[in-house]
Structure formats: C-alpha cells, structure tokens
Length: 142
Image 1 (cartoon, rainbow, N blue to C red):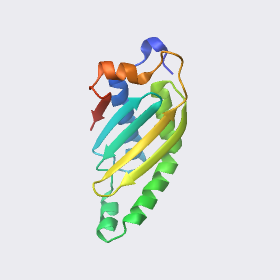
Image 2 (tube, rainbow, N blue to C red):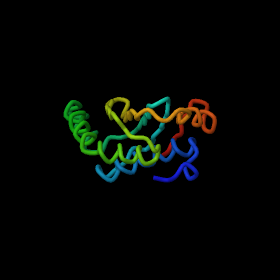
Image 3 (cartoon, rainbow, N blue to C red):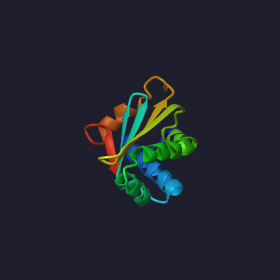
Image 4 (spheres, one colour):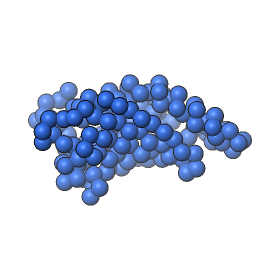
C-alpha cells in the first residue's frame, strides 16, 4: 500500500476505483461496462455501472430469460468478489468488511457496494472527495 504521502487525491481516487472495477469485470467477462461512476460517503464506496451486459446476455433477455441473466451475473460477482474488494482496499487503504452487488436489466445497470472498516479519526474519504471532485463526490470513468 502506498504511504499517506503517496495517497491519491480523492477525485482521482474515485476515478481509480471506477477504472479498477471496469478492468476486473472486463478480465472476467471479456467485456467491461461502458460507464462507471464511483461515489464515496463515510465508510461506503458505491460503483454504479452502465451497459454491462454481454451480447449473449442481451440475447437471453430478448428471448424472455432475464432471470437467467441475473442469476449468471450474481455468480460472476461472487467470483469477482475477492479481487474487487482487494482493489478497493488497495486504493482506499481501508479494509472492505462487506460487499454487495446487484443488477438491473432495463435499463442495463449494475451496482457494486463496498463497506469499509471504520477509519482513523479524520480519515474520512468522502470529505476530501467532496472538496476535490464533482459536487457529489463522484467521478465517472468510461
């Protein structure tokens, strides 16, 4: 882990998390989402992804099998859980104590939620994120 002097600014932190999540999904599925937006608030990191489905998954939805796609996506997310959590831990320098994930078919969105272990006093990630990035503490990566 980088020392605190090398820690990324929070605006670049949210972008780095978005980029890492998209990269990991692409490595596991062969295609990454076309958009990702990360928000950090207190001890929670939320990554909202759009245009996540593979061509084969869109075909299954078209054939009336959206639940099959959702089940398959849940399995992908369970498989990626450790690597996604490790990336967030490395970037935030905080331990991930809970990971939750879900998908929506139409429109095509997914969300990855990471709950971080409480940080040291004054080590709140969202304070700096709000000061250094978009007004909502969010950064988008494509």
